Length: 257
Image (cartoon, rainbow, N blue to C red; front, side, top):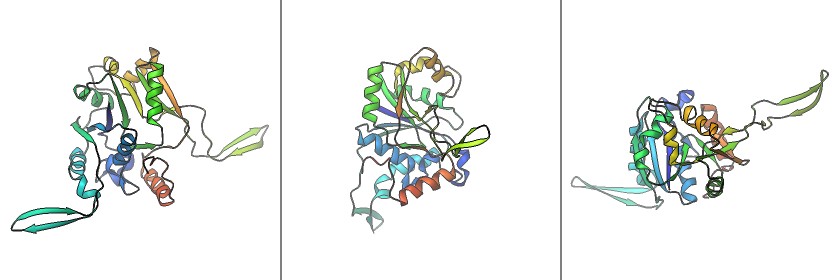
């Protein structure tokens, strides 16, 4: 089963980092976000990836082409103009990665459409290259198959950034520090059937607009509610926050450790 990952956005809300690299290569706990996401999928047995690159896509290509020496200690031997590498650690990945240049300005719906020919199976997974979670991907897939809908997305109850005060006649009755909101947002980590391509128009579009709304209007959108850890790494403040969690030993999304 293929795992499609959106990796092409400019990450304008994280300009401190993305001026120099694409958002998926921003480090989280010492490794790029995209590596963390792929490690989670591989942990559950999903190790065939299609990366939809765009902005600074060559840097993503370069990272994966040089993954072995980036992730291991080694000695480089140079003699008579020839080079050989002696690795001292053996951290390797069993991944099959297809990297597709889906355009610099292309929207998410257009990016998905451009990788259609690389997806042969009836069912595939889709996520964003800037969010981490401890969602159980086996349970997500089982839920998708049980509901038998075109799309299943992981539903998240977001937490407000502010404390909430409940009042009655001008008197505070309770105070909740950053509670979870009642509504559900799209947390990514989706499972889709290939019928989704019938919902993507010829013109470029956001996947979250016409295609997703069309599927929902037809009653073909299932929601897998996740109440565990989830975090979108969307701003520089988010980068600082998630790296602080790592320093505290609270990397809850690292299910492979």
